[in-house]
Amino acid sequence: MEEEWWHPLETDHTAADDSGSNMNDEPLRPPHDKEGSLKEGRFSIAFLLACFTMPLLISISIYFSTYTHGLEVERFAMREVEYMGNEAIDDSEYSLYSLNIEDYKSYGCCADEDRGWYPELLNTAEDVTISLKFVDQDGNRWMDGRQYSGTAHCPDGLNECEGYIVDDGTRWVELNHGYWGEHMGYISYERGFFTDANLIVATQQSYAPYELEIELYKMDQPGLLLFTIAIVPAAVIVATRIAEKLGKKEIQKVVLLRDEYEDFEFDISYFQILLNTLLRSVVFSYYLTLVMWYLIDGDWWNNPIAMPMGLILALYPPFAALGKERKLPEIVQVRPQLWGALLSIPFCLIAFSASLFTIVGPAG
Image (cartoon, rainbow, N blue to C red; front, side):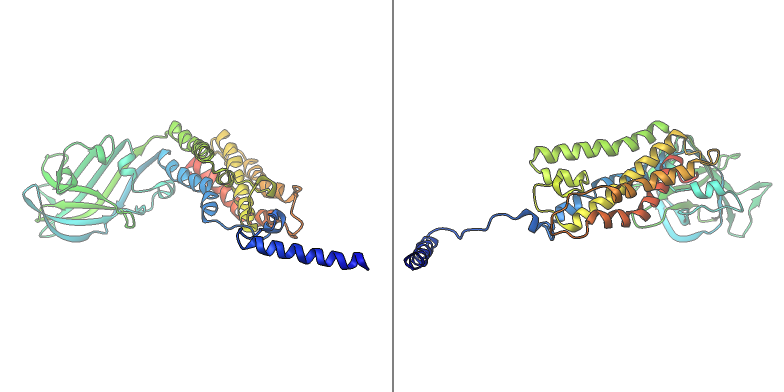
């Protein structure tokens, strides 16, 4: 009885002492329970943005790889012309017309040119010839046996074309009649960030363009293609080293798409692990198939085994993620890596196509 009476008294006394101590000190915090906090975890916008570093760099790499592939356009032709008004250029009055060249146009030719066309070819091709045909005020296209026409030949692309003037910040390339050498006006390339590419024609007010033809030739640039591919891992290495130097190891691990709970020494959300697994599978699918396409120069037509082999390589990362044993906190019932791997499968198939596009280009 005495022992039973003594212990409650001691407990009350200790509680009273603790209460007095809490008046002056900060409240005592419970010990950090990592396993209990991992189920929900800490959601961070910085983590969310960091995990998209590699996918974003790969997307940029694919975009710039487009400019490294060769293409020969034998005849881009169109007759849709829009009048824009008049403007003074180099102290002379001209009528302005716009021709939308965002999409490939021709009279029944050609499939590879249609797939490979993009407007910036006018500036990146090694040889560009732009020809325009005109009508006069009376609707005549010919006079004294010669056709009203003007041509600009640019051996190094429209941006490097000789015979140009700059007026009010706009670069105008001169159009001349090929045989007579008569000045027929100017052309200018115009493209905004959210607007289609247009070829602006400035011609004398007594003429109007009715047909545009473009011929160009662009060479393959394999060295530049290799550079656009290699720049992604190089940029990732730089980004992770910077994060390490700044003491942001958690950002470094998210950039590298680590998808194991034990990889992190901080609270990581269930959703972040899921997303890392998804993106990790897609990135591995892209590079595995990219290496295969690069080794065979994207020639899937003469390599019938390439397509099934590419599909196997593309789907290997998500299935490997599904079969991998994971160490999970007790509170996590369904591993996030499972959902991440399953959800990544359609994106891995997209990565399979994107890697082929990177090697062969839009005309492939």
